[in-house]
Image (cartoon, rainbow, N blue to C red):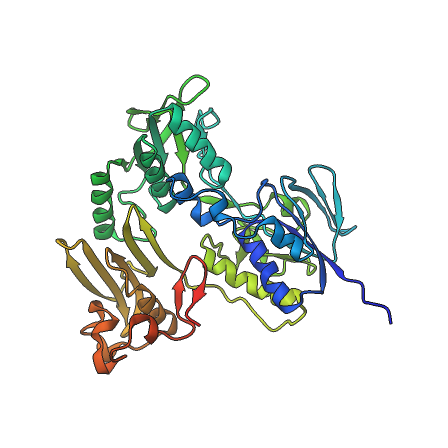
Length: 433
C-alpha cells in the first residue's frame, strides 16, 4: 500500500502568529504537511513582547527565543532564516526568496507581520533614526547608549514608553515627544494618564506633550528634533514609536486583495482559497489587530482549516491590555470613554496610587481602566466579554471580586473563582482552563 504524499505548506514569516499556527496545526495533523518556513530575520521565532526587557538589560536574546532551531528539526520543518520571500507566483504555486530559492506549495500561509511607521518628515532617513520592532532595533539602541547621551522617543504609547524606560536604564537622558495631550490615549483616560506621567517623571523621563515633530535635524547623523512651534530638542538617537503598518506589499504584488491589511474571511483565507493569512498583516471585518491574543485566536482557526477540520470561525476579538510600565501596573479593556446613556463608577486613592474606573451600560460592564491595582482586571474583562448583569454586586464591584462574599464566590481566590475560559494572560492568550 502506497503512502499518501504529503501536501506542501509554506509559511512566509517566522514570527509569533505564524509559528503559533504551526504549533496548533501539528497538534491536529502532525503528518499532513511538508512544511517550509521563510523568515527575514536571522533568528528562530522569538517573543517580540519581551524586546523591552532585553533593552532594559533584564533578559538576553536567548531568553526570549520561543522555538529554537531544534524544535523545527524535531518536527521536520525546513527553516530558512535571513531569507525573506520576495515574490509569490500564484499560477505556478511557488514562492521565490531573496536568495533565489524557490519552494512550491499546496497551501500558503502569510504571516508577514507589520513594520513601524516612520514619520515622513525631513531627515527621517538620517543615521540614528530607528523604529522599535525587532532584535536589530534593540541592538542599535544598546549600541547608541554606549556612545551617546541624549535620546528622543517620538510616541507616548506603550511601545514608546517601554523604549524610553529601556534607554533611561542604559544611562541615556530621554525625552518622550507625544502629539496628544495624554500618554497612552488608546488605553488610558486622562486621570490615569496623568498619574502615569507623574510617576514616569519621578523616574527621570522628560515629556513634551502636544508637540508635533516637523524635522529631524543634523548633518549625516541625527543631532536634534525640531517642532511645529519652532523649538528644538537635542538628540543623538531618535526612536519612532508612532504605530505600525501591516506588511502587505508581498501580497499586493501577488494580486491578493488588500486594504489596510491582507483581507481575510472568517476562516482566515484570503481571496485565493489556497492562501491563508494571520497576524498583524491581516485585516478581518475591517479591523487590524496589534495585540498578541487576537493573533493567537486567528492562528487556532487557520490551523483548524489547514488540518481540514473546517469547523472553526474567527469572529473578531474583544481586547484588553494588561501591562507594567516601569513597575506600574495598568489595565484597560473595552470602551472606557463614556457615551450617552452610560454610567461611570470611579474609585481613587491618590495616597496609594490607585485609580479604577468602570463604564457601565444597562448594568453591564462596557469598559474598564485601572492604575496601580489591576488584580481584578481579568474578572472585569470576563464580565465584559460575557455581558454579565452586575446588578447583584453593583455597589461593591469597584472593591473587587474578593469583596463579593456569599453573593459571589465565597472565600475562593480570584483565580479559583474564574471560569475555565477566563483570560489570565492577554499577551499569550492564556486562559485558566
